[in-house]
Length: 106
Image 1: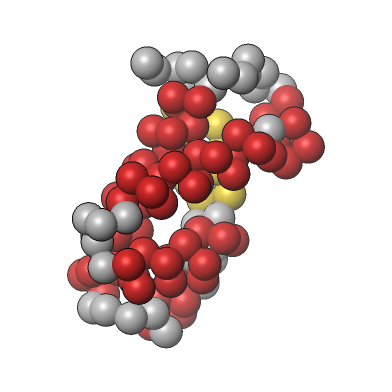
Image 2: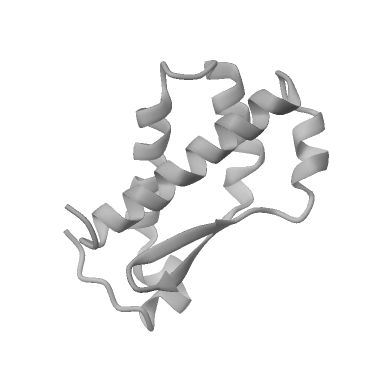
């Protein structure tokens, strides 16, 4: 596992690129088979590829989404409800993976 330094997270892509990539990939794999793969893949490529992981403090992370998420959602397959459900599950999984990778939870 990776030792986490909150100050280094300001430059996350320099210090933690591999860990971030792993968190996003693991989250995708965790959801694969639970949701429509076309919707999952579209959210991954068209929304989350432009997202920003943020360290909140106290071992908590959040995912900042692009400003134009609604416009992006309109071009994706599935209903708005499906989009919101899958996006919420995906971001929650990424946050959980970040906590696990940086050893905030076991």
